[in-house]
Image 1 (cartoon, rainbow, N blue to C red):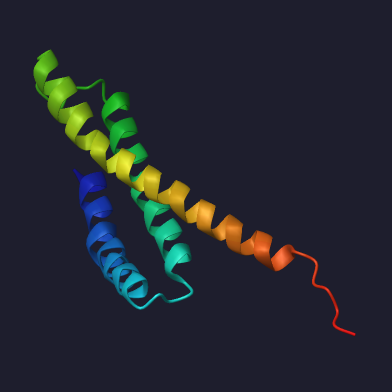
Image 2: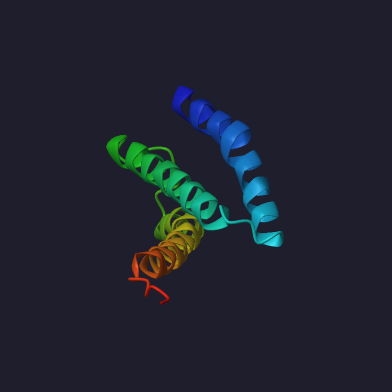
Amino acid sequence: DDFTVAMETVTAWAWGPLSFLTFLAFLRHHPTRYILQLLLSLGQLYGDVLYFATEALAGWTHGDPRPVYFWGYFVGLNGVWVLVPGLLLADACRHLTAAQRALDRPRHKAH
C-alpha cells in the first residue's frame, strides 16, 4: 500500500530522529524540549488519525473481523499510540502555557 510506505518513510526519516533529539533535549533540560515534544506528539497523532481513517474509509476490510482481534489488537494496542502522544501533547501545552504566563506577568520597575 503506497500510503503505508509513505507514512512509514516519514516516521523513519522524520519522527525517528526527532524522537532522539527530543530525548536529548530533555536530558539536557534544553529550552526547546517542550516544543519538540509538542511537534512530535502532533505528528504521531496525525499519523494515527490517518491510519484509523484510512482503514475506516476502506470499510475495515484489512483486518480480522472477529471482535477480539478488532477491539483487542486494532483498537486496543493501536490506541496506545493515540493515548501516549495525547498525554504528552497535553503535558507540553501545560508547560508552554505556564512559561508564557510567566513571561506575560507585568514586571515591577525597581526605583
